[in-house]
Length: 543
Image (cartoon, rainbow, N blue to C red):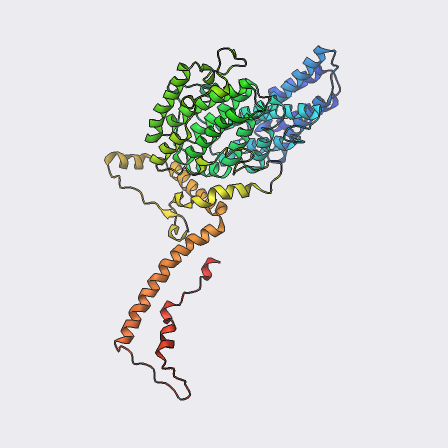
């Protein structure tokens, strides 16, 4: 019977095509049957047949969106919406029984079908906006069936870039959908429900935090500026609701938890300072939105030191708690969670009344990072994620994401440490020798550890080395290779110097001049000619 499952799906699809103009209840009934049996075809669908089924479902959704129900008939509108939800459920059920790599392909395929934004501030017609909304709901449905392992696999450039563009749509509901898609794809340790609302009581959340892998760190180094910039600009939208701001907080909190590392904390704190800056200076935001942003800053400021185990940052968390208490003492509870849609103006401080004691101190953050031995140069930049900041890139018009990724990855090759064969010949990459740990427990762990972990670690190191050479700047590689060349040159100079000393001691007699050979006994000219062993060897291997 299994061999006929795909034929049954095709028959139902054809039946749905024939009834594309029928009453919504009839179409909903067909789609409901389809959603209940479509999972049986997932196991036998390979290659083009998978996208063929997805494309057929998306086509029916597109036709349903363009089918305008009478505005004076709410029942017809309800029936059409129910039909669309049934199709989306069928799509989700189909994707749920596919392997993860095919789910990624489906999400990329759906994203390619979403009408592009006419403008970052929205010039799309009502039909396009509705279609974008429906397709993003379909994407969210598939995303809930996917389990993220490595971010570089989950967010290929062809998927991440249009998703970030869509996060700046004019419609707040669409922006909310994009954030929900990011939530389900970023959350790997089931912390989503705990981080849905901003809070300063982080200890009560019992978050699950694991050390970030090298691949994830490389991913956020490459794409972090674009991700943080899109989130920053999303917070600047004048029509943001409380739900929008809470969703962006959740995305930032999940990124912080999933990518907790000394290498990512500086950029996250830059973003926190930038959010406070826009809450103080952005004239397009309402007073309520500014209060909400201050509450988000307070929540992130408590969250970051709790998930990044750096002693100076944990000490700064105590100072941050003083800021929280100062806000309460000053009657500025509106600058703390929870976020509200309306505040009583009689009990709230105006933006001009906010003193430095109740604001985040950028200098104190920098001092904490310096104590931890981290680079604070980027933190000194004003509004780094704004349109006028150093990383300000026009997402509507730029040549390539490689331009921004190079700025991030080119100067940080010293931090890459991998362990592969012939690693000593790899510029900018140093071999990391394992520490000696010969206790009984360590030997027992080595013997009992499954081989899959070793294979996975080896594959991760291989991909990391490949990522290093693929993203690093060529000039940087040349400079680092030149350093190794200087060591070789100095060693050759030392060898030739010893040979020269041997010649001067009479080890080999000087050559007898031949007739016709012109001798130059001028000592001044002889001193001006450099010895042969001081001539630099050509660096042909660099190019």
